[in-house]
Length: 300
Image 1 (cartoon, rainbow, N blue to C red):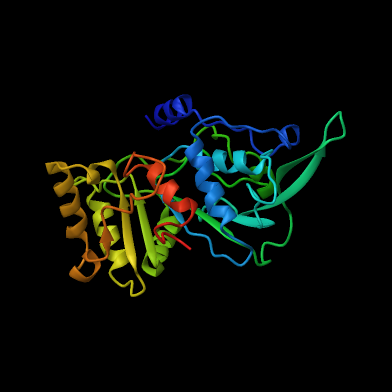
Image 2: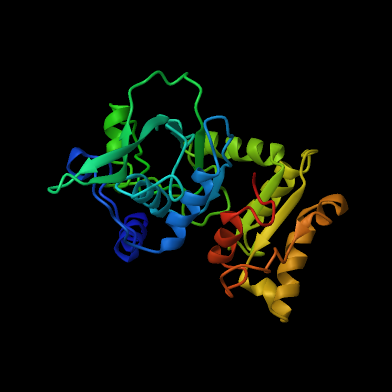
């Protein structure tokens, strides 16, 4: 069943990228939905080498985050106004015990074509520099596993970095079960997720309705956010919340039941919908449009 799930997800994924091998160092790839490349662009162009980047927590098994990040950082044209990323290197962490942290270097380069005309484009490559050097961290916590999570440790961390956009033959994925800790593989990752949520100032939820059947996640959120004394807001993006329907009230009630009265008052169920390009309120596109200029004070 797990193999069937993994193959089905990969077959239906429209976002593709071969990774960081030498053959595609300068290759521009824009398959899939533009919204994911925009997400990374607005996140990284707002940051610098001193910025602490937000943690990404996802229940998806697919490789859209990894591939769209590579799409943005390989071959994308830039100038002093558009797509210029000031970060020179970053460390990607899954926080899974058998997957090493990976350091990547970003190079804003000038390519010369047949006419010797300079074209500004990006290069992304894995680096062997000391892991202890200070740099921005990108934490992607895929709590239910991922198509690129091997069940056994890879021998060469740099070689693994080249193939991060490719599914492994028999990936670790956690099917919908009550006991999320039925395997040792995700334990460290779930602990990191709990710590990150307990320290967060802003939490942004996109496309998660908190179903009644996901009792484990309800208890997890209560445990993680209960001791959080620094929390400003919880932004919840979902199209249901922009309708006048019983489903809207039911979803709001589920979220409210997870938190104390003090935290309930910090949940924003209708994030700003003014002066944005989209009319698809509550969608990923809505969230990314707000992120573009930090219109709602979401992150930075």
